[in-house]
Amino acid sequence: MALEHKGLPYKTVPVRFTDKDVIAFSGQERVPVIRDGDTVVSDSWAIAEYLERQYPSGESLFGGAIGHGLARFLNSWTDRALHLALIKLVIADILAHVDDADQEYFIESRSANFGKSPNEVQTRSEADLRTFSHAVSTIKAALNTDDFLGGDAPAYGDYILFGAFAWARAISEFSLLKANDPVHAWRERMLDLFDGMPRSTVGYDV
Amino acid sequence: MALEHKGLPYKTVPVRFTDKDVIAFSGQERVPVIRDGDTVVSDSWAIAEYLERQYPSGESLFGGAIGHGLARFLNSWTDRALHLALIKLVIADILAHVDDADQEYFIESRSANFGKSPNEVQTRSEADLRTFSHAVSTIKAALNTDDFLGGDAPAYGDYILFGAFAWARAISEFSLLKANDPVHAWRERMLDLFDGMPRSTVGYDV
Image (cartoon, rainbow over the protein chains, first blue to last red):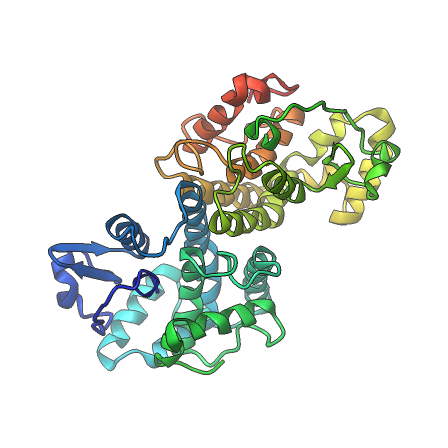
């Protein structure tokens, strides 16, 4: 989304969880990773900062120092609250969609994180659903009547949040948002960006 | 803080919880309220938006549309998560500091909110302390190594967060932040702003 925002051409490479050799050149084991000429950057946030610095003539991702600091807050909250609330609702669905080669790795690594297996985590209990709804209500209040968190147009804050809904959509049919929720309408607008690129990726129509 | 940020002169009027008549001119019952010539605005967020719109030549509070939307997210989170986590830790301390005339009002209105009395809410249980620490860790990650959420200088996002710590400091000796926490250092910087105006208000040195 950040590359599209900046109008930069790119080529994507699908990577399995266990394809650590494919990204070994980045000196670490997690996606996303970008290679731009001789420069390699990993981690979404670091990539966004790199793109903003390296390509200042494209549309701004942060809108200056104030927007940058506030986007880092949103990123921090998304990592600590939104992703955690979300993964509890769809973690078994991820397992059902990973490559055979990744099954064991996914079960072992996630069971270590949660202290129980993906199927035991994904109970969609009232409490878990409430925690996720609470996170969504925070987003809803932040959008207010604007089309995007960035106002009339999306910016990196929108992409931070959309990342969570995008990966969920790729692996789960579970309906996370009610059709009449303004956050649902926002997600629809996000899916329509860049000539519908996000909507054209593999995923469920939820 | 927003008025100081904009470099606007102002006069403050102390108001008790039950002094509803003092702010009746605002057409509602809650502080903060400002009166600027013939214009009356209530609610911190609405006041910040008003000041940014009405006094564009002063230092920007939001830094543009992107920063505005992200500040609204922070405001939404602060209302829903930070203030709630905080008030559970100091609500009985508030009661101990309100004017005699406000005692009954405070107990009744807050007991209605929480389903129990302020003294029953403020147990500082492990769970309540953990919830507050989690909120603080989100702020810490957002600050990273910057002096302020706004980068080198504070902006409205900093004032949103500082508001929580400022009211707590006014009524409680409870130590909310460890001396070695970067959020503590940030709060110290906030207290030093505007020639130490925030530090000079009545409060505990915590």
